[in-house]
Amino acid sequence: MVFKILISDPLSEDGIFPLREADNIEVVIDTGLSKEELLNKIGDFDGLLVRSQTQVTREVIETGHNLKVIGRAGVGVDNIDLDAATENGMIVVNAPDGNTNSAAEHTMAMLMSLARNIPQAYLSIKDKKWDRKSYVGVELRDKTLGIVGLGRIGAEVARRAKGQRMNVIAYDPFFTKEKAEALGIEHGTLDEVLAVGDFITVHTPLLKETRHIINKEAFAKMKDGVRVINCARGGIINEDDLYDAIVEGKVAGAALDVFEEEPAVDHKVLNLKEVIATPHLGASTIEAQENVAIDVSHDVVRILSGGLARNPVNIPSVPREVMRKIEPYFYLSEKLGLFLAHLEEEVISEININYAGDLTALEIAPLTQNTLKGLLSRYLGSNVNNVNAAYLAERKGITIHEKKTSAARGFTNLITVEIITKSTKRRVSGTLLNGLGARIVKVDDYSMDVIPEGHLLLVHHKDQPGAIGRVGNLLAENDVNIATMQVGRLHIGGNAIMMLTIDRPLTKEELEQIRAMEGFDRVTAVDL
Ligand SMILES: NC(=O)C1=CN([C@@H]2O[C@H](COP(=O)(O)OP(=O)(O)OC[C@H]3O[C@@H](n4cnc5c(N)ncnc54)[C@H](O)[C@@H]3O)[C@@H](O)[C@H]2O)C=CC1
Ligand SMILES: O=C(O)CCC(=O)C(=O)O
Image 1 (cartoon, rainbow, N blue to C red):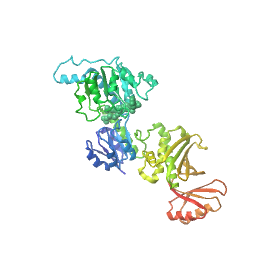
Image 2: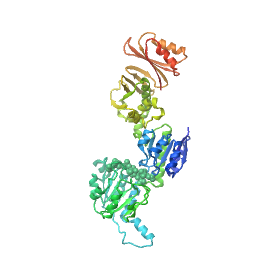
Image 3: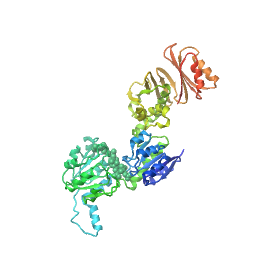
Image 4: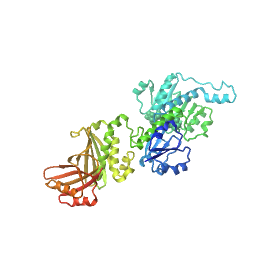
């Protein structure tokens, strides 16, 4: 199968070599599409790669019913409707590290330009004026830089500002005093950062909590003559309040790379001589564009070849180290879910997944997602995947519980999945045997040792002589070969089960023949 990928914003040609090299990927570059043009095309594509221009709305996502992956060559995914992507089972990946350096360098360039009025002086000299009086600036040395948001870019800016011999103070909900000491900067509350900064720079994502975090009230808490910088996202600073604060003389200057509405060519703040601006250029370097295109292209190739994304945005991101450890359990977890889906026709109201033994030390969320994918795939086919499995399960009214316990009943690792319906509970346990692969080791209360693959036949019967023979004969009469067989019972003469692996699926009639035989309680065909 050949997957078609649409690149709808300018991306580095050198950076997309992983896509060009893949045998099963066809790349179509079509930038600058109108909304209608994008909607007309998107249905033909399996993947979409964008920067910040293309608006990947719910309408685009729902029209692009073949899309499996949306890649953002950069950090911010606010131009992508993540909920819609998740609901429609599309993986969204980004490239969070590739442009950090460029964005930090751009912030420093803006900081210095702001301090020394370079853009204004440049315009003046280009206008054939030799005006030295109007552009007297301020030094950075010994000034305080307040940073709001100390993530990847904020921390790089902090390092560079220290190189300029600035005092640096930062606020971030995940920034501790210990981290501050390690970075050699001050730790403050938001109000403290606002109060002491001669320059304030913001480096948060645009979230409900950060929208207009720098507003009228925040400006009032700042020093007179403060200078502010936004190279993160438009909307973190309230642009109208910024305009007023500059006109009132509270704020001496602002450097903006990003705007609430882009392209921003007509905003009133741009008319103020105190405001310097660039058209969202933070990541616009050859290096950053190559880095982000490489990262996102690699992830697209991985996803389309059935692998795991390194930088997923809408599924739990698992560190590579951890992923290496849990990856072997992926197959097992999906098969356990699918196995259980065959056992009951009644509506499932609850799923309990228990991880024991070595698994307790690992990140289990992706395994739960995979178990749910296996279970729901019986009903939803390829509409369910690792992205939307939990979402779809919850939407179907299924409550999901996951738990870690130490008791692994003698196995080094054990996953037990239980489904609860109105009238019953069914359970299956599986393990990964060192060097031997996945095994189902328990079905309800019966111990087993079965490889979870192929065509299985699960027969509940009374533990009495001849039961196994009768099934064997019937299968032989129908020319069905038995590959493996396991029996389990609770006590002599009591309830028992047999689980057979057979070489082909049984027809409906053959299943009915077995069901009709005396002493057989429930007969279930399971295709894994
Ligand atoms: N201008 C441009 O071209 C570029 C802009 N960006 C933008 O820069 C921003 C930062 O990017 P990264 O550092 O890579 O992201 P990051 O995720 O590494 O850091 C963001 C930080 O903001 C913090 N934060 C969240 N809510 C906060 C709040 N209410 N108050 C204070 N801190 C808060 C988070 O804890 C996190 O540490 C993003 O908005 C990103 O989209 C990134 C690259 C280029
Ligand atoms: O693609 C771009 O140039 C914008 C980069 C950006 O804003 C981001 O990565 O968040």
